[in-house]
Length: 539
Image (cartoon, rainbow, N blue to C red; front, top):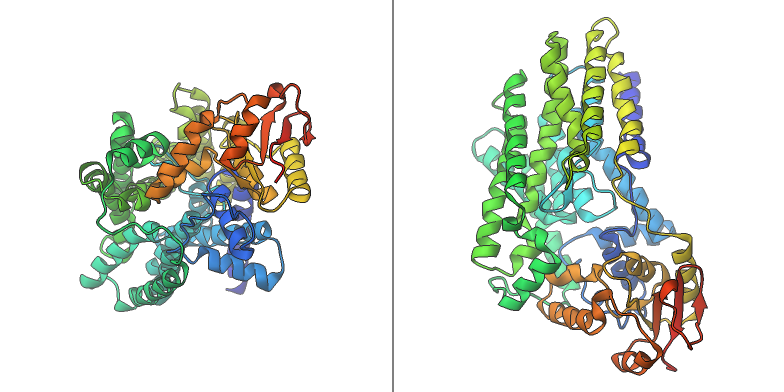
């Protein structure tokens, strides 16, 4: 038994590391960490970002993400980035553990269950709400998804108290992600398909969040519960954060979710798993909740215009449709292969392998290569299952391992924006400029390098595109951000020396332009092959 547990633990670590370093991979300061990291740096040192309108309005009030991370920083003495990466690895491993428990409960042997966990760990990009089943960055939603998957696996094993603790912790990290789980958990308890031990931890997590919110609320712009969006706020959100508006997703995305829901239904019918237990409730109930979240979002946001709807973003629950489709398709494929239904098995396994690369194949133009790769991996897995009984399932392993290495060859989930030149610029600003200096990248358009600069240099930005994502949270910030964005040319301003007095009057101390837009007649404070920085204030 100890040897088996050791082998399962090693397999979880293997999938976690392959997922982190190979596919779907990981990023830092390329998405929402551009927002979270400066906010946490300011919580550590209030003298930072005193003039940055994004950082001053934190939306960490209803989450334990920052408290937990900063406590680990203080206890360990490690850098914030190191702690966040360590957390990300731990939570991904917990998610893989949950996937393994689910697959085992579906009646698969350990190797086949590991295969299902590995395939589901390849992640998937969900178009429309712009969300991932496996987050590339160490962000609260990614931690919460892993904990929800772990909770489902524990509940499947009838470890209700442990499952409740995992889901309650997910609620502490990201309540919107955990809400669908808790709605279903309450239904299961009321129908006596799960014990009351499952829901007890939720009360503790709510109490903790309420205490944290009371402590953190000071200085935070609060949105009344029943406040409505005005015309300006709605138009700005549609421009900057249109993914919250389900009417903008398009009919083909709705059809895509419908197809994935059909995969869930058919795969579940194909599996010979217990039909009435809590596992069935979550594997089938969460995709249903995901589909229902689409009309719910339309009602709350686009019909009733509630200001809290874009902050909550209920439609992001559609990620559970894709997540369960991946789990069940992989399990159905293995089950069909064991029964020597090879054509059926090839179909299910190809679907399971296609979900992680679907966004690269069915984008603006159709790319056949990712689809061909998925089908090839599916056929390889079928060949492995052919020898399942004779080889104790080990022939499944090559197909899963190959996927981690083959998919990044054809599919680029993200690009590296943190270049050597940007690192040099941030290092100069951090050591050679005042802590309260304000920078502007007037010609950066919608690029993300200003946000990387903010986090690495620990210096304020006057305005940038990424910070505009906060229009979902704060009405006053929305107007301030839009005013600044427009008055600085919406990221398309080729600044000249004549513009310096105007920029100084706005409160900008340094302007950073691309080297191609170097300002004639002005002496730079810093320059390299990509960036030129000018001091425009004698402050």
